[in-house]
Image (cartoon, rainbow over all chains, first blue to last red):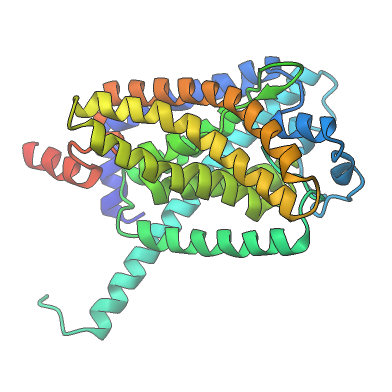
Length: 126
Length: 229
């Protein structure tokens, strides 16, 4: 983010308060509510079980096996609810960071293309 | 509705991976000039909310659970292309860090939940809102369209998922389609409630942060604020 963009965010107290409150709500949901979510299979998994094609997934070796937090449970934590809550905590910050990176990438792309246009087109007024 | 590895054949997941990768590139290009000090943090916070809310499985009928999808929420708040990118981020993180959805099926999951549940459903929402706002206030039109099309987003995504399973030869369409649509018609009610409540809350607190609300879009609102201050 350019100096201008970042400092405009820092000056926008209303927006910062909104984002802060939203983050608190998100963390409460991910850490304290998620351990009590329903553990029944979801719509697709249940129908796969009923219609007899769930084994297709169970017999297939997953292609990606290096997930640090498989099935939303932090490994090595005895208590299931704590393991799930911690996975929520980790996941919220990873997702937040990843989305900010994508946002910044798009922003950077915009700057880059603008510069290129300015370079290749008619000489600009400035 | 996250498809695991093994449900789709290579031609199906290969095609959908290419389609989703292409759409992601185009989306980055589309949003490049819109990214500012409001939209970038909103992208982060919306993605984090959807991740958290997707963990909260709620029981529906007969030993089945459903969870929030969030594609319509992201598109209504951030605009369709930024909303699509948020879904890409959430699905990528779930796949790589939490073994939720297979890596070969990632493109299919992005297609179902981002393109069908996000982009397509958003455009249906958009035209419905435009029609409705002739008869009622912009705010009511926005909330009513949000409710209806967030339900559709889940059902349409489940139809796409069923077709992919059938095309892959995993299960006949006549078997899987009614089953998937039936259960997701129920899950969609939860989707509609959550999406509408969240949009209503944000609209109340910060209408300038709801991109699809036609009263000042984010960029113009900022200029207006700057002029005022």
